[in-house]
Figure (cartoon, one colour):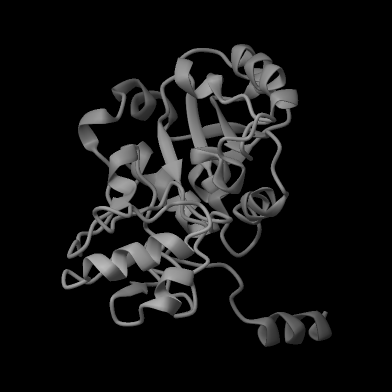
Length: 252
C-alpha cells in the first residue's frame, strides 16, 4: 500500500482542474492573428501556399473551418500572420470562424443562435454518439482523449455512448464520404428529439483537403441545423470541451 501511495505522489495531479483557463504549449496552433498592414501582394502569396484555400486571396482572411493549421502562410509571412495558442475557437456561428486582418477579437458563441431547449434539457447531462464519416482517426483519437483522466469531460455529464438511441446528439468527424452518408442519416434519425449536431475538425466542417471530391456526399449538412463547429486538424480536446460548455451554458 505504501508503494502505491508513493507512486501516486510521484505522478502528481493528472487531471486538469480548470478546463477554461488551462495553459498549453506555445507551440499549439490555435486562433490566428493577421496584421492589418498585410499587403495585397502578401495576401496573394499566402493564398498561393495554402493547401486548402483557407486564405482568401482578396481580403486576406483565414477561414478556420477550412484551415488545416499547417502554418505555411505564417512561415511565409512571419510578423504578418501568427498563430496563437488560443484553443477557444469553437462557435455555433460559421462566419465567426473567418478571421480578418486586424481582427483581434476572441471567437465566441452567438448566444442568440443557441436553442433554449438545448440548455434546458442537456446542461446537466449530454450524451453523444460519435460518427466517423470517412475520418482519418486523428479527430477520433482527440475526442476519445476528452474523456480520459486528464480532460475528464464526464465531470460535466458529457459522455459518448454506443447507441444513438441513448444519445442526445451526434458528433461528426471526417469529410462525410459517400459510403458513410446513409449510415450518418440512419444514426441521426435514431436519436430522439431534440437533438444536436456537432462538427468536429476541419474535415467535418468543410471537407478539408478532400473538399470538392466526388467521393463525398455532404448533403446531410444542407438539411440539418448545425449547433456547434469545432475547428482543428485535429480538434483539440480543450477546444471540443470548451465549445460544448459554451453551448450548454456551463460556466466552469
